[in-house]
Length: 191
Image (cartoon, helix red, strand yellow):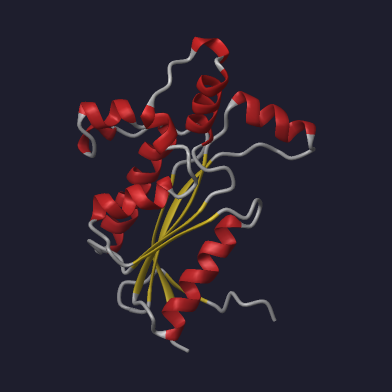
């Protein structure tokens, strides 16, 4: 088993000011993207830039709720609520794997691409997958992300279940290369 190293970390926390997305997206692109997708692409880009990696071998994302805002827009339009117009963009961006796919397409990453949606364990699952593949020598680098957004309806539902609603926009870069690493990541396997 090879050692696995953390090379970069970029996070946008709730309450942080929104970054200037204009350096990444044209006006037309930005109009069609929800806040979650913009934050995901920005944190991924910043983490990769910090790590000095243009295209990782794998893009592995964890998300508990996916692009919930787009899902809600699409479902409201489908049910005719609020006279919401049916927009194909809301449908196309309503699936959980939209985040990892968009990042991979923008990077030109044609390798392994996966999304974990294991409510409450999504990020841990994504990290475990990346760590295992690097340790086994299947890949050398991985971009791992944890992205979730909160809508009023979702927050209300979570609070009713006794769950604290949280947003996440976190990207990390893992690698088998020790040069320039922040720290070594110990085994993530459950003993």
